[in-house]
Length: 268
Image (tube, rainbow, N blue to C red; front, side):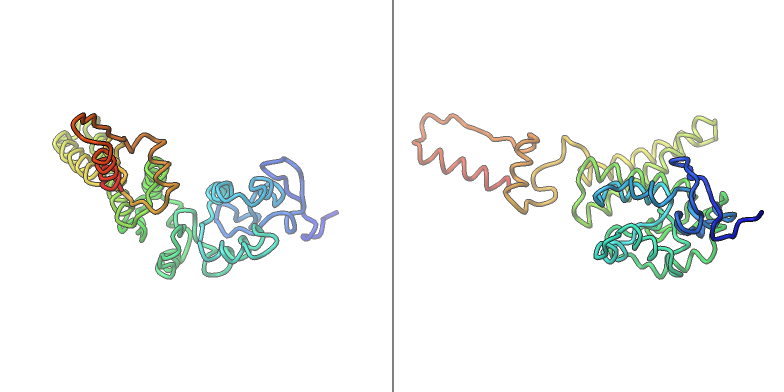
């Protein structure tokens, strides 16, 4: 006896339980889910992954299911009781359904219309062809875009990027790292002239890193600005701010206080 399609059951690839396909799984427009037109992880498991609507675990979930993070959709979904359900409904609308994690808009000002236009079909993401990335301003393989995104996240995690100019440098450094790795691989493969190209690529990478001060020894209290006492305290605790005490025996206490305050002022 054939079951009605509305009662068709499917085993969740996370919990392993059989659930009703059309009710317990979110819709997917990915060609990887063409047979079922549903994500293979049930709604319950997805919700369990982001208990208390934790933002970091929500981003991790989107990355795992290859759905984009769109700032304005997230802001809208947060106004509803079921944030995840609302977000999945919005991200599956016509304008966003073909986008992937690599199309995420974390800052809320990406030109999504241009991104959407490049995704007229999903097939270009399933082969080894270069595609244009507006975020990275160039043509890259999907695997290369993944590398750039992960590298940028690593820099953001290690150096707490907060200014637009610093983020721009971070993206250039990520691209320089990718290029350097390619040159290094060519050098290992014995490609003629690869050693010279690698040396030049390494020079560019080192120069960019030094210019943007992407090293702990170069990071100073004035690199990204100080907006509050808590930030000053944080820099003190991380030992970036080093108090200099000069033992000038020929100065009275008032002179010493003035010198101390001048040192603090220069550090701000």
